[in-house]
Length: 139
Length: 157
Image 1 (tube, rainbow over the protein chains, first blue to last red):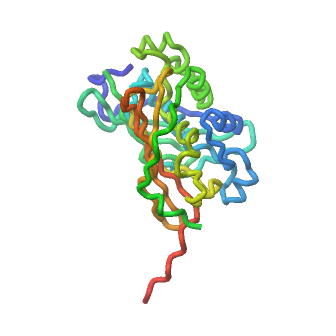
Image 2: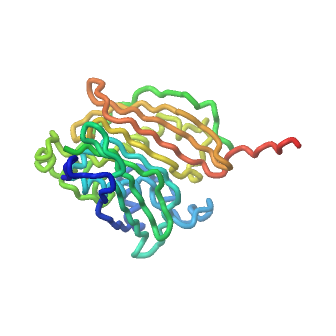
Image 3: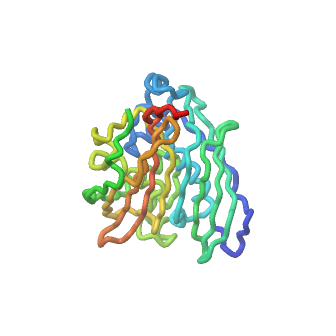
């Protein structure tokens, strides 16, 4: 677990990549209770103007959050976490699915051993999250 | 069809108790592809100082679906077509991690409904407490209803 004293503004989290396939979406539907058809029915997703079945925003948020929790060591150290979903993540009906690339930087050191992390999540050249920030309690 | 603005400011009664179980946390962790031992193994969680396995930071999103029918989103009077909905923003304030054994109560409210170009934004807040009224988390969720904003009146010259 990184120590507050050793972390500086600008400290970078290890970059991560995560994949998401149609099978992952089905699993996430079941575990979250979010069965919105746009996450599993390509016909309806396209009929309502989306490029394809799209990933749950909350799946992208969870995967991006993993860069934070793995860095923090204790996932219980996350005090707040917020994102804007700027672009949908289309998930094609193939074995590769979509690839999410996540990076993060310490943006600010707060009182009480807390740090603010700024996070970036991209698919290809597109930022799929903006204003993604987490506050983590360090020791 | 625009979403009803009558819902702005509505607060709903506290949900029935939501019992957080180890298997449920495991299933969520597996679904997000994160096999962190703190989510799966009580001993590993205790080694970090938690009384039992804890849930991933975004786990409480399940409450919004579990109690959807008790809140605004699936109320037909709101007039939302869920196939036109995408998620706009989400935040979690976590006073402490959720853990197995928690019995949670949640209160949903509608903070705002407004146009954003041709779309509409619906902002809901969920306050989550544990037994004894202990504050656990606040969720703020903005969902986007695509293309449902009322057409604008042409501006007078």
